[in-house]
Length: 76
Image (cartoon, rainbow, N blue to C red; front, side):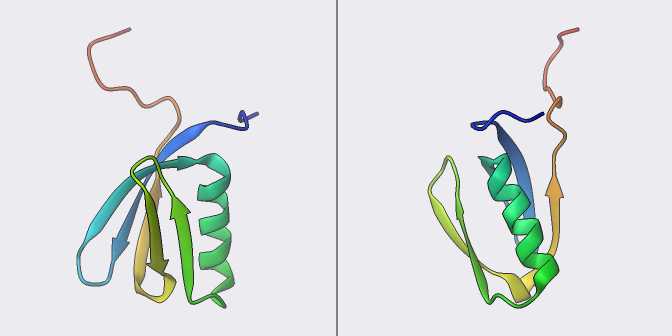
């Protein structure tokens, strides 16, 4: 089970070709997915480690949610 303060990396691609990446709370990633599925909301606000983003949901092409165990480097 995920901890309350767990942070995960997501990427959001927009119809113009731009992609943003951010570290967000797992709950925020879940809420974004729910907002995209509902398709009734115009925008969604993400609080990230870099700041606050407001995303126009109708412009989102895809969202990638990275696996929690992803690591970069030469460790075992």
